[in-house]
Length: 135
Image (cartoon, rainbow, N blue to C red; front, side, top):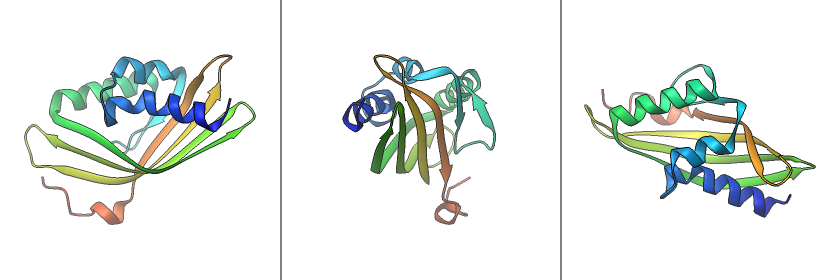
């Protein structure tokens, strides 16, 4: 349990948005009781609802990518905190390119032999996108 192992586990889980990862690895990282907030909708979602929402996005987006900047990893006992600047960018199938500048935070916990996600929260910096996205 150290910041390096947390960083590796979190990067591997989010590699579906930043590289060659899979949604299976992303969902496996998060506990079945995890709560997730996506910048795209104004509700707290359980894991199943988040999976459903991501399925909707996958069906309606040509591309979806997360650009994570200045990540910070902290470990307090068996709890890990991740915070970062985030840009969510993609191309909806029916419209032009979209980009959302956001903040990402995650609460993780050590589960005996690996890190698990208990919470993921992405929220937009509204001042950066107000009236900027087409459509």
